[in-house]
Image 1 (cartoon, rainbow, N blue to C red):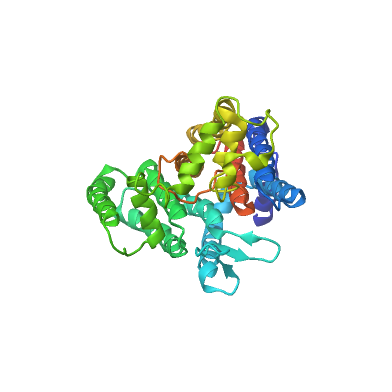
Image 2 (cartoon, rainbow, N blue to C red):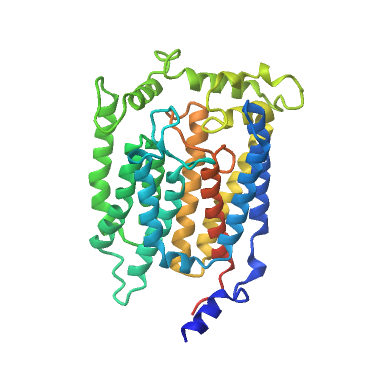
Length: 386
């Protein structure tokens, strides 16, 4: 009997292959090509071989993930959770942890490249929460509407998130918390629990925001993080200070005008985005805007919107509760990262380091995004379950 189950698990005939979302793969490939082109223009030591290796590897991982049943993956979610948490801890408390001269310990030096565990942790947290909620939703008692589930979800999220925060990676922590909030709302846990929580958390959040905007050193935040928030609130006073980076980004974006400078053919050394640091990652939207202009930006935003919309459509059409919750978590992750990255580039939000999915440089970020897309495709091709 166990052998029969293994054979059934390995059989790919049970998938509804006509629902395999090739259009989603096409969108991801187009964004990867755009990313490679832009990174090659803004990076002085760009290696096409290394970039193509990262893209091809990520696509292979996405295709493999798309045919592995997400129910099977969720059976091993505890293993994934422990490994990813240990890797996050290792970034600061192990010999292979490194800050890449940024005073922010987010990477593991693996020799061939630098691995950023928090990017994979985001996907693991989504799987963990989905499996947790699914366990109580499908139980005979259907005890999803309980404080126990709420506290289990918060504890499972905040343990690794705490270590992400002490890396000095506040932005990734905010993404994970946003995913938790959205999945709690969508889980069916009910207003009886979320209502009192909101009544407590919202005033605390307002008070914390007031606290960090007052002068002096702050607990839980580094000084540069406080300066970025204060600079955002008082941009005219910090035009040559903490807002200098974002001001240059806005100038560069505006200089792209309607059609961009790509067709002009001028030397890239004269581009305004050369005055912006980390323009291949956190500020990738700046060179994209200057090269492709407003029209190009709208087309790229349309491609990103297609991915996000497909996430929530997949959640709506999912064959079961577990698939729905995974798709909602992935959609939230992509939405928050796109919103924050472009918001920072356009000075609509305080400066914080979040990659733009499929466009920013970084193999780990691309790998995490591709795994998420693979999960979406797998949810879509699942057969109807009894």
